[in-house]
Length: 86
Image (cartoon, rainbow, N blue to C red):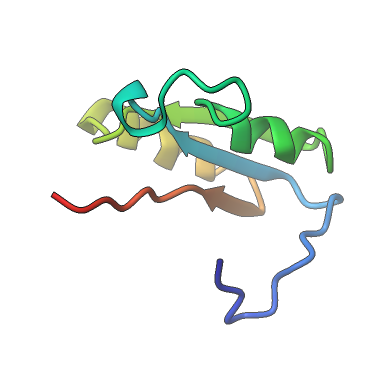
């Protein structure tokens, strides 16, 4: 995690868009403690002033368009970026 702009901790008064990638099971297994949407679940524990969105592991154009439209409604966008070796 990086906080180069000193944004942490996040301000729960600000409306947030939380975008999370759906992680295929081949990357995480069927582990109830490490699963798709776990980042969104963790964010809801800190604030409910947010919009939750998810995308495929490799997001599609329609998902990107939806996220860009949702971003217009919020003060801050938080998203996961999963990088893996090929």
